[in-house]
Amino acid sequence: MDTQETPTGYTAAITELEDLVRKMQDKDCDLDKLAAYTVRAKELIVYCRERLAKTDEQLKSILQELETSE
Image (tube, rainbow, N blue to C red):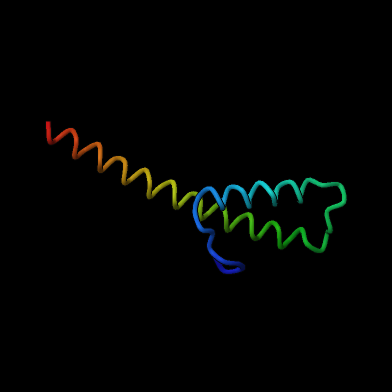
């Protein structure tokens, strides 16, 4: 996250991303801000993908532990 702060969590990132999408879709969207909105949206998408991948790994590990303990 180069442009702004790292979100406090996945939900905060999704909320911010949804807000950016609304701003970008608004017919009165300031063209000068569109590039900045797009950059931030990309950062948030990367963050969300990383969080999802990490959570997926954690869940797989937990499930594997459960299978081996049976």
